[in-house]
Image (tube, rainbow, N blue to C red; front, side, top):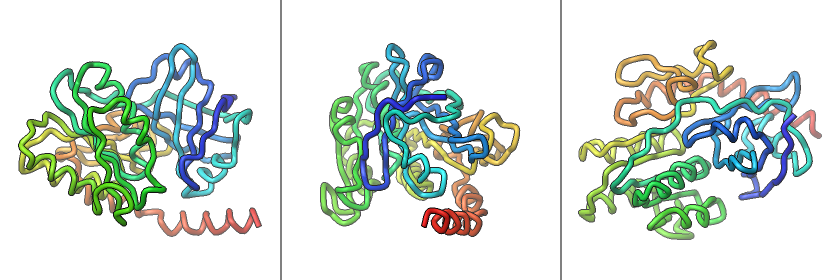
Length: 276
């Protein structure tokens, strides 16, 4: 059992948990994830490691309540425990050693951008963070990123804070400003990461994305998380989840992500009936 030491509500549907997991914390690196299971008959869900503290033996995860399992997890608080907390899984992100790196986070994806920005900052790399959400109340990790970035630029769909529009608008402005950018790291909805990759492609600006396809076991055995990268089949759990954004077949990934949309809808409706 893995004890929850701290819970923080970032938005009405987004929760942060600090979990006591010393063995995971000892090996965790930016870009990796854990697989969580709440009870013996529960669903296994992958969650990106948002932070870790080796000395304290803690791992931070952030969840967004979208399905039954994430809502069940969202009801837990400090003092509760999680049955399984397996990791760290996946290949650590390849981080630049110098230059200027732009970290782009969209919505829920801002949380997993943070450990990469933090590690880059520790190396002495100049970090520019661009974060976005539908409105200012849904922005997360802005203060944390300010601590590890030379600059934090904000975009909201409704214009309630920062640029009125998309993170890709801000990225285009930054590129066209003439500053020499070395790399871009983008994490967020699949459609947003595809848009970022298309913005940077004409400039041949190296762009990393962290894909989140359907995942079951996290060990490469089930094949559910396959994604085509550079014309080759890769498994996000053991070959990724971070890949070259210019090589990912996003159209295929988006189609695969919708395969079980109807089943997910039915499961949500059933879970809501059980609650009420």
